[in-house]
Image (cartoon, rainbow, N blue to C red):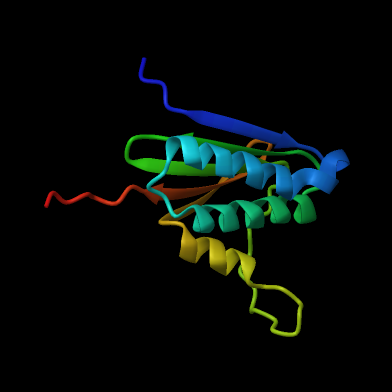
Length: 133
């Protein structure tokens, strides 16, 4: 069996005070150990946005799952809401609307899937090809 490094971070509405910070810290540690090639700032911004959206738009649980393969990093956010993310026109007066656009720009690929218990947002970064000198 070819096991890939992974970590699962679970939170619930009762733990909102540390949701984003805990997910960011765990993600940063995971990236240092398993994905030194990835743009950590981009991944951390995406994780922050996915966590914030899950907390803001989901009345129930959410689960963040990170998997590192040799050629890719996959960040999955499962939550109890069946509603997919919706791109909104950015509001430069402080009303938001930047997050989903940012997720789509920073990740190499983004997919949203409906699940029997809610949805999954999956962001993937592919390891760049290395060239020999």
